[in-house]
Amino acid sequence: MSSMKDMQKDFSVSEIFKSSWQGFRQNVMLYVKLLVGALIVLIVLGFLSDRMQMVGSLLSLVVQTLLAIGFISISLRIAEGKKPQVSDFWGDFGRFLPYLGATILMWVLVGVGILLLVIPGLILVAALQLTPYLVVHKKMGPIAAMYKSVALTRGYRWKIWGVLLILVVINMLAVIPLGMGFVISVPLSMLVMANVYMVLDGMVGESEVFPKLDVNTRLTAEPL
Image (cartoon, rainbow, N blue to C red):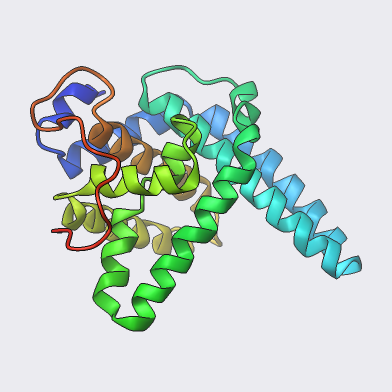
């Protein structure tokens, strides 16, 4: 697997995908177990939602948020070069409220940006992309995580958009084999973004390319 320090030198998109694929392959059985468990939970949830619509909708929001946190936690550990266990999946469930708050704020900002003028919304999609990972990994609050994400992605947003577009294509192709491809594409997508986060955060080793960034960097007047 390519070292994180090597990837930090130039934010190579190809190296990030290569490292993520290798990380997925090395932990494929763990992902299978987690995905089967998540599928069972979602099936039960769907059954309950048909009978209790209001309660079901609220429960669905809670469960889907917890599942997202769980898969992010696993992806972060793999990106750090660790060997995650099933128990790591629920290790960060305590971040539920900050994660939910950050997610809502992110999409409100992106939605407003797209409504007012498409380009600012697209910039915000890339600028805020690392927010969920910061909330889970750094235990940051929603606002602080968004500011930090803006700072970390500064100057790399075109590459982040390139990564996102590749992931969109991968997930579209995953639909073809009766949706079974999502077993690979969904965890791989989260692992790719975890690697992007690790590279830009510069957590492993020191790099002159990624100096310490000010979390108070503003959302406006930001270069891509």
